[in-house]
Every structure is written in structure tokens, then in C-alpha cells.
Length: 331
Image 1 (cartoon, rainbow, N blue to C red):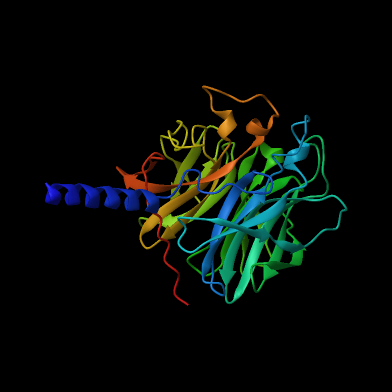
Image 2 (cartoon, rainbow, N blue to C red; image 1 turned 45 degrees about the vertical axis):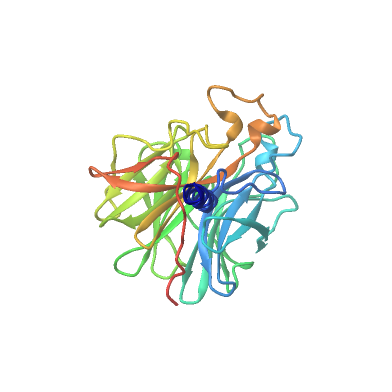
């Protein structure tokens, strides 16, 4: 009897330990405004932790316009030792504020030869409608916290958002972004040095935003936020893209704050696994939507899921309980 009881207790504690190790839902909730969105994750070698940059939407702002709270945003930072548990750090010190009221959206951050590069959507004000310029600026940093302004990118027009940068096999760089004046389709630009960019035109004609390009399973993939789940494109040359038949994160999950569609994401390919960091608006679930423009309607959180490659397509079970163990990159 004592042996049986001991076995039961051991199994119970193993189960409890396993549950504690699983990535929580939600993964991260910004404690300032409760509006974390558009995440991007990068290793911080000086602090020996992973940093997540995100659009810090002002969900707690009393705003009935439905627009002002999405403006005036800063870029928040959270940190984690392994990608499984995150804590709030600060907002990024971005040295580009030419307007008294200003808005930062959707950063992409990469490291190259000891310098960090951020490509950030900038909106010159805090507005009550969507009829205003937005463009992409380039910033650099040596510590990931303080960012120096380099330039405004000369892209197709000044109604562009959501940069995503990826290194090409020949060592040059490609940047994809959303052209809002062309049906919110995906455009791209090329650079040899990350500082000078040549706009190349349309990459994907479909409507969507927040493109994220990554290499995995011997292919290139791009995830695009279609506002009804995430669409997946694949390519062998980073020029010609084929959309797969099914979207991911379209159907609601069962986890806490994960019953709404998944939005603008980052993909971290690490130690052979591909992790999808995305955001949800918990109050916008179809079966029980919150009152429009209420705090619950505006509130957003970061979630994580793992991608699987099955039958030639990318799959994602957002209800699969996973343990994230990001491995630090080699120096």
C-alpha cells in the first residue's frame, strides 16, 4: 500500500512539473497597456536572454474612435531565458521622433556583423482615422535598447507598413512589406548592405499584411496575416510564391485568450523546431464578441505554437501544449 501511494505521488508530481514547464496561455500580456501585438524575437548576447520586441498598443486607453488607441504606440520589450516564460523589460529607446505625437508599429529586428538593424513602421502623429502617411525607417543599435536613426526607406510610396528582412543565399538582403495603396498586397525591395534599398515591386498580389519569411525543411516560407488566420506561401527561389491550400490559426483554440484568430507573427527556427509567436484579440472571439471599442475588444496578448511540416504543407495545432526551449545561437 505504501509503495502504491508513493508511486501515485511520484506520478502526480511529475505531471505537475510537466504542466509547469509547458508554455503558458497566454504567453505574454503587456502590463502597461495590455495591448502586445506584432512580436519579433531575437537573442540578446550581452544579457544572455531572448528579447521580444512588440507593438505596445494602448488597449486600456478610453477611446471611442477605434483608431487613436492603435496610434501613439511605443515598442515594448519582454525577455526570456528560454522562450517559454516572458517578463516585461521596458520600451525601446528609438532615436526618431520628428513629430510631437508619433506612432511606432511592427518592428523587424535582425543582427549582422555585431550591429542590430530595426526596420520600423513610423506614423507621424496620433490620428482619429486611417488617412495619413506611414513609412518604414531604418535604425541601428549595438545593445538592442538604444536605437540610432539611419534613414527613411525609399519604397513605392509613403503608405507602407510591416517590414520583414531576410538574407538571400548570395549574401544580399530582401525586405518584404505591405503596400496599403495597392490593395494591401505584399511588395519587396533588395539591398546589398542593409542601408541602401532598391524597390522591386509586387511580390504577392493577395491582400494581407505582416509578412514573415523564414527557411525551414529545405524550403522558404512566408506567413501573411490575412485577418482570417495566417496564410502560408512557399518558394524555392524567394521570388515565386505558392500559397498552400489551408490557412493556420483560423479556427479558434481552447487555451486561455486563444479563441480568436491568430494575427501578425514571428517565426523562430531554432534547434530544428519552428516556433510561431503570434497575437490574438481575446475579446474578438466569434462566439462571444466583446462590446466594440471596449477594453476587452481592444486587448491583445502574445501566444506561441509550434509549426509542423506534414504532407508538403505547414500545419499548426494551437492547442498542442508545448515546451519552448530556445537554444542560444553560436557566437
